[in-house]
Image (cartoon, rainbow, N blue to C red; front, side, top):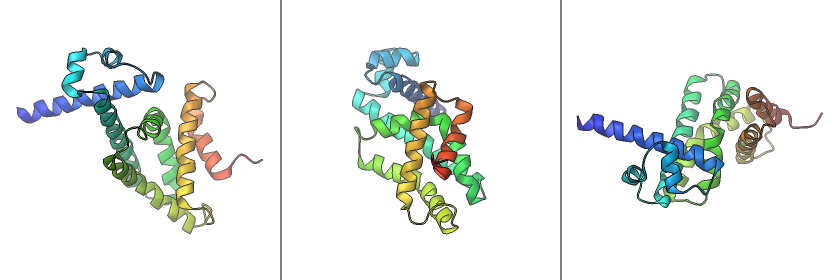
Amino acid sequence: MGQSRSAAKEAKLHAILDAATELLVDKPTASLNEIAEHAGIGIATLHRYVESRDQLMLQLCLRVTKVVGETIKRIAEETEDEEAYIPALVEALVPMGDKIHYLTHEASLYYSDEMAAAENEILEPIRSSIRALQEKGIMRRDMDSEWILNVLYSLLILTWQQVQQGNIAKNFAAKLVLDTLYHGVRT
């Protein structure tokens, strides 16, 4: 019974954190009361899960890192062909743009050794894929793999922002990221 209660509590925390991420992307200054309301709970319930805004923000960063990391790992495990990994990854990550956007903007404010280690760990499969693609001559060898990784990361964030603003159709977003990454903007 204790284990199912613990699992239920963790699921509730995840639901609260997902709702908080959704709200904070649109309204970064949202109060804890607004976050609780958006999550469909009272402020007292929110405080049972997190004691302060700082603790909430750290929990959000860790949750986002976990969710994005699980997606990156799953795509790496499901994709046997190295050339198909980056396109499959982009297809999976574009819909998670709010989480990636949140992670890149808020994680810097709530930086910790734990966050740095988690981020480094989740990015490793992408780094490995980029290096393998460089070795095959599919990606430029004269560019540092970290540079390419950061370009990809930036394109994902920019694309999500453009989708949110209505400048890019959601179903066209992944193709645009991949075309830009592999071919640039030159005609």
